[in-house]
Amino acid sequence: MNFTCQKRLFYEALQSVSHAVASRSTLPILGHVLLEAREGQLKLITTDLEISLACTLPLDGGEEGAVTVPQRIIQDVVGNLPDAELTITADERNLLTVSAAKSQYTIHGLPSAEYPMLPQVTSDTRLSLPGALLRDLIRKTLFAAGTDESRVTLTGCLFACDGQMVTMAATDTHRLALKRVPVSGQIEAPVSVIIPARALQEVLRMVGNSEEPVDIMVSENKILFTAGRVQLISRLIEGQFPAYERVIPAETHKRMVANRQQLFEAVRRASIVARTESNKIVMRSQDSTLTISAETGEVGKAYEEIPISLEGEPVQIAFNAAYLHDVLAVLDTETVEFGLTGPLNPGLIKADGEAEYQYVVMPMQML
Image (cartoon, rainbow, N blue to C red; front, side, top):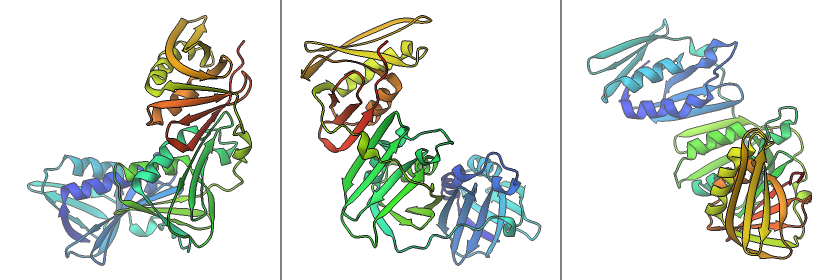
């Protein structure tokens, strides 16, 4: 294998695939990146057998071939080389040589034949979403996914599409984040799958701030995301996602509207005290003022006031501060609305002007 390429492009490609490298594995080769030069393209591949990442760069000439090398070492080497054209060669002993200007490094690799094959996703179920839309779907739901591996279906997000509407939902049983957005175009058949949270974190990283469309292909047990030169393939979580519609309050008797930023900052400050006492904060309304308080024997007391508008009876309810902080951190609107019924009933949070978004959060005991 022998080719030349710009240091910046090669380094960015290494960074793009770095997060699928297995940090702890009984298979040393999973700590490597596969470099494969074929048909005028260089493909970089990493996998931890759960997710796989691939990035493709165009090549102008050179000799075909493939080798694997330790990902961390080659990324550190290339990252510290001068910003110049790189010459990269690999021989039959799996020694990779990287040269730039007057610098030259040789890295011991392993045979490419030992590296796991990149999973193939073949399906007629395809759709394309604008990067900004997919990013918004993930950001506003992913944080509510569960972390308990004994309830594996909750450790990912439901992704469903019927050709007219895309739905993404996540829940850990204490809260539910749900976002629906209309889409144009048709798909062969309705899609309803559970995508692991870690894979969606990587999709967020892939998409970045790009507005370019992301192509999605779904098979029986895998999903493929393609954004520009980068591809991510992930296994899907098997099982049935909870019937989340049942926990969304059909109606609420009290409606409280607050400035999102003011509420976010008040909750964030009160959580400093609340975190040693189950993270509980108490919200009480008095006329057009909402008070937020927390008290713990170890730390002390917290008290905050913010202005609100309230329809219905006065509010008195306790929530986990982290559950409020998480949703307020990802919303973009100026105001948020709380729909409440009673101190033991779930609260429904909506964003002003974003009717397709709903966040349901279970209350805590006041005493």
